[in-house]
Length: 482
Ligand code: FAD
Image 1 (cartoon, rainbow, N blue to C red):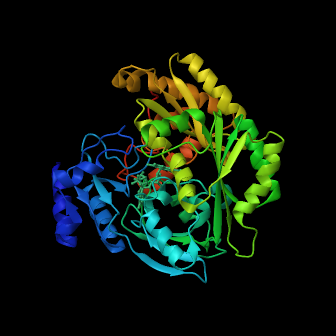
Image 2: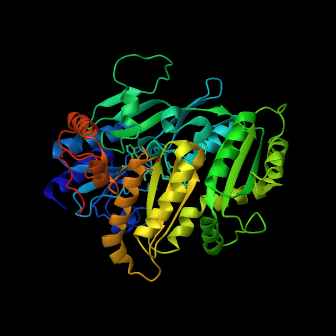
Image 3: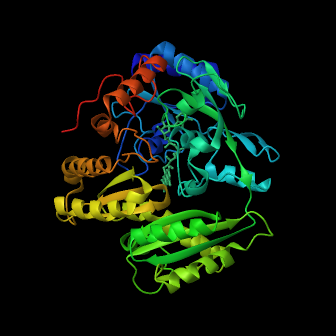
């Protein structure tokens, strides 16, 4: 621990009491590694305030003492953004104790939730008032509102409701000098120049700490139906989506899953079973909802729309969940893919987007090109086809030493895949952010204009680089990875 860190810790204890500082290694250890186990950090302390003013006091003290901090929510991020540096040079600032829902107005369809509120708890609170927050993802039991805002998270309902950017009506944050930006008022019109709320959304804790957000709600659903469909290819899947979209606005989720990913889930996740008999190269999970009791029941709607698709061969086979338990079981297959891949050995993940119409071809051609360039690897993509966003994963050859793969081969694979993405007019980060994982690739593949502007914003708000150092953008250009 440096002398400055030690002084800061004492000052925080004096200002906020002993509960606001954790220094026992057993309390700290679980928060030093990212969810995938790719990044490992160290820190002498976790600072854990329970109020906005507590955050402001800590940030002001950290600025005075020149100590770097890493904001952390549920630690479910996929790019190492919440993992502290390995050299122990930063303290973790945990937002998990800021976990109150300050207000929930069904009449206004708005909720003000503090940064540490867990997504699943927000879902439950909204539902209790006949509303829902229409963003969900596999990590909903741990991911926090602050993390979701800070990564501009997406998930499985973006098709209809957009990412966090579309769902955040206002942000409250502590800026790097300890001052408070109060943007919680949900104004339909506000033209006071640069949009600070939107600047903080997706900033990954590099420009300040989100302490609360005003979020948009929609009516709770009256009924939902979940279908599992076997299709011949991503192109056919997209055609099916287009046909459904032309007929109804009730489709909220449309997720594509290759046979390979389904097989991994069936192999590694206990209690799972395939929804369809027979082998299908690709699968699609579709959810349709009704918010109005008088509307056509979603199961009848999906049956009516899928029947012609089955008849003319667009869908090879389909099943509609017969119960809520079966619907949950279908979703569990989708939500467990990342978990199953963790059990399947070393792999390198790419959360990428390309224009929607280009995606089916990209999925096939990029996987073939990648496997040809790196013999023995296996490439496949799953996810949010209708958003033009898939998780393109390349698994290492069987039997390879994981340490060698991650150190030598994985970076080459990533550069190869990212070059294909850029050549297709896409983005190397669709929904997970940059964190530490994509820092070098962002630098390599971004225009000078983008990098100079990111850096100028960072320098203006955080001139000493104390907020989440080594993530998203650094004050000086990052050297290219070899
Ligand atoms: P953390 O991991 O703690 O932090 C993420 C980043 O935000 C870090 O840079 C951190 O410094 C910063 N941060 C956290 N809180 C604050 C704050 N209050 N103020 C400022 N900065 C802060 N993501 C998707 O977008 N779509 C998906 O479909 C999806 N599926 C997932 C499935 C699984 C099984 C898992 C494990 C993750 C998935 N994720 C997905 C990634 C992850 O859940 C999201 O990135 C989520 O937003 C992270 O929230 P968190 O609270 O865990 O944040």
